[in-house]
Length: 225
Image 1: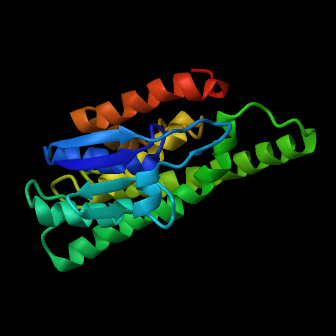
Image 2: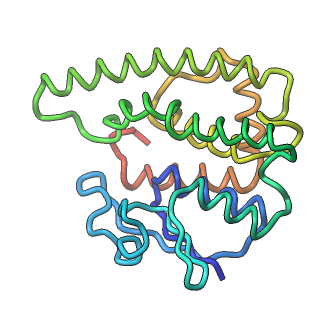
């Protein structure tokens, strides 16, 4: 059986969990240590052995250990082709991969400037003020990105054709993080908001969102529940 090493508040771990759930793949999971004060220290030995980046997720299949959510997506697709999480044509698969990359590296970039909201105010008022300013700038950037995504998904059920793909999973998780970190609301973007609600209605997505909310209640009291 596959084994997934993951973090309770790891966006990229939850991406993999959603893919496993959507494909109905049985797996075992083991959560690594995490606190807001120390992060992922002490690092799990299985993660250190498998991933030179020292990060979750790590997926183990026999003597094969994989890291990076995108690499894991591609492995799962080849191992369990159905239901597919990529479009059929090479061109559409490429567009799908670009959207997933966008979610992970471009859309997520301003979200990093909201992560301070999971922590108590910094003891240095100047540093705290700088974080607040960076967070407000991040929100403006996210509003622009939400508007573009809203236009792109308008009139569609999913971002890449007629069925769910890894692009939807990646975008959902990044947008979920904007919402848990008190970023811009989705209400002004009706197409994007409807897409987000539809995915929240799917069991694998709902489970990830509920478990993140539960972990935040324990690990991120600064978010206020």
